[in-house]
Amino acid sequence: MEASELRRQLASLLVVRGSGHARDHQRRYPRWELSNAELRQLLGEGVGGVILLGGSAEELRLRCEQLQGWAAEPLLLCADVEEGVGQRFEGASWLAPPLALGGLHQREPQRAEALAEGYGRCTGRQARLLGLNWVLGPVCDVNNNPSNPVINVRAWGETASTAGALAAAFVRGCQGEGVLACAKHFPGHGDTSCDSHLELPELPHDRGRLDQIELPPFQQAIAAGVASVMTAHLRLPALDPKRPATLSKAVLTQLLRGDLGFQGLVVTDALVMEAISQHHGSAEAAVLAFEAGADLILMPANAQEALDGLVDAVQSGRISQARVDASLQRRREALARCSPAQEPLEQLISPGERQLSAELLALSLIRQGPGRLPPGPGLNLIRLDNQLNAPQLPLVAPALLRPAALGYEARLIDARSPSPWGPDPEAPLALDRLPDGPVLLQLLVRGNPFRGSAGGDEPWPQVVRQLLAAQRLAGLAVYGSPYLWQALEPLLPPDLPAAYSPAQMPQAQAQVLTALGLPEAALEGGFTD
Image 1: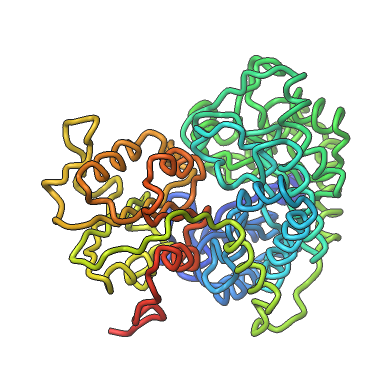
Image 2 (image 1 turned 45 degrees about the vertical axis):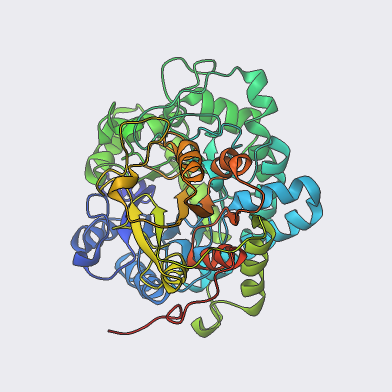
């Protein structure tokens, strides 16, 4: 085989990162999102996939058409849309996170599984309409560790049975729409206490424990016909004392292919993540992953170096041509399962999908206390991860406008804001730095990549006690982590207005604040300047 043909074959097994926006200056994460010139060059050389983030739904459709036009062969076009396409692309459906259905499954399993399948259908249909043919979900991790900083509400359940049943239902719904699904993060990232985007976690369990907790959701997804499985960047010393799962033949070939019988595509998690890139260069990481059993190499730190490494490995005999051919065949078979978009974009969100979104929010709302917030002047204290990158908190967010209409002044706390903390660990909030009056405390806390925590390291129980002792806590709203709500709810007086939603988007805020007695604000539908 000519070297140029071999290079094109191997290039088709790379998936690189691009922006959903059309222009280079619009990229939200230029450290990882390639420029248009780089994308056009790589796709022209045969690179076979792009993972996208950012932009509106309409932009995404145009972007997918543009990228496919730059390639000579059909592309795998994917996105991390675990919570609906609108989670990443404005204008599509942004759904309550999967863990919203976990509790319902304990009480009404059939209803929960039907909703999870509808969740998959909604995500798959909208992805297909916008040009995507591969959804990087469902998360099959069992979130049985409340301290997990990165999985949290992204999981479908806290038990293997719930996570597996709901993830399999999602797979059926998504792939029924002609879009590939992806079970992740194999063999399970739920029982970890650090984030593989930042460091290499360790799962200290033996095979017997994996068979009980971590593996069953993946087995159920495989039984449902899931097209792909994504690897986890974590160490499992009981299976491989030397290499993390992404780079381990014992995990990907012996366990996933051999023991679990998976015949579809195996894709790495992003190789640019610190758990891998801190220890291996782009070329060696790609070769090790391919040797271990991966078919597709996602987001190498340097795509050209990764491709050079793979070519050298085949030419030297380290990787056989038969092994390459097997991955190419699996990729062709996956693409053959994809269906093109046929409906017009005007029908992006169907009436049934709007009903699904509302039902998910309604069934996961928890409220306590019959009281209403007193009128201001008061303080609307909002905690969030990053106010400079907060799609859940636009200028017209109910969390801002509804308290403002009652006279509550907004103060935002994030990692960049002046510290709100004083020296007293039992009364940690520096009230002397804040306005007087009753306080509405709104906490947007959940597991997210790169944060390293799901809020459990922040003293919110002490803050609640402090505000109650000062007779200043007027209401509490928690959006995201159920574990924070579970820690705070027992501290509240029975008549204090408080509510919880696993979701954080404006629709969830509107529902929670309605439960606290705050009506829709005049400008909530938007305004112009």
